[in-house]
Length: 498
Image 1 (tube, rainbow, N blue to C red):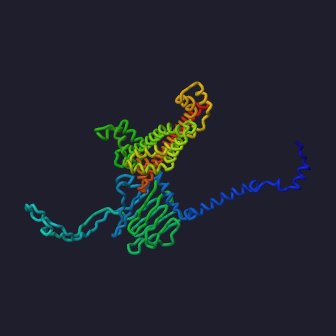
Image 2: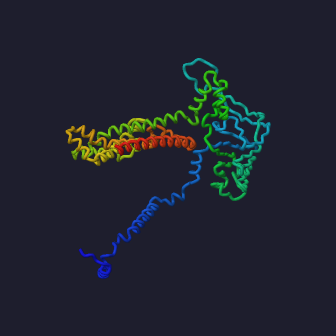
């Protein structure tokens, strides 16, 4: 074969340039692919209205929810009464305990004596007792009228209150007037029953009011927020951390430092004569009504067991069925097709949908979750196992056959050594993955910590409890992921060294 030199190649190129030019796809494939991807993203932006969603999204609420995961609020109300006095009220289950007097809320108090008018009231008097088998009618009862009267009362009231939201922001409250200081800005607000809530100037960005006269909402960033109403000033002051995580306000250990608690546990006198302080502290911690540690841990263990049992049953059932579905093991097209279509039926419906179905069938509880995991993973693992079997090396199986081994011995010594590490590795991965899935399906009634998590989210207030449970789930997933990775590495390592 004659080799062409450079001059001859140039002559051919000059006579037939169309044969040496690269094709259109070779020249413009990157531009076409890039343009197609760009058009796809533009279509998605329009079809899902992403711009509108981002523009109308309330990022402030999302930020507040995230902050609530790692913080808690104390919510005092400064009530403005008609007689020109004020009263500070805390909620019944306030996290700072009974008789709260926080340092960040300064109040000037005075004792006053006032006369209260008590209006007349009508009372029904029972008729004179007389034995009768027939219930007396209302007509037989007499009406007694309690006359209107006045009563003199002596009580302590608040005349001036200052709430420090942080080192630079505070709220100064006197009857019918509120001063808000935020950094270098000041906002004067007048309160009246007729005119409502009125600011002395246009509201800054950190204050909002829907219509004139309605309440004004003040934002102080992570420090919290406040509502200024015509009859009350509602404070929501935020603190970093989880309130009363160890002991609730009803516990005798509430409000004590760690050193004081250890002193009581080890050397202190018994707080309850019938039990030791350690037993009392453990009970107060596990049955803490705000955090319900024992119940949360029980539900978490329920989720772990649900994932393990569901995956175990799925592995046990998928293992023999995969031999039926593998074409090189069971050489029957109809049987192979039926087994694979059965796997497709099981895995074509998401685990969440199967959980809804089994919850309706069995009722709420772990059995529904186990069934959903078992049913979905049987199809998925069966398909993966069958594909692994179809990709084995037939030489090892033929070698076992050549020594006269029976069918079961061929599968035992010619097939299983090749696929067993893969089967175990995939089963371990699904076990670790199902720990997360069990949390999701638990929210629809399948039990476990998922249902507990959903209940905390529905209240729209216990976001610190949500953060606590999410943290526990993350820890469990991290632990199981590490265990699964270590076991899979050992299995793969043994396979590679054999």
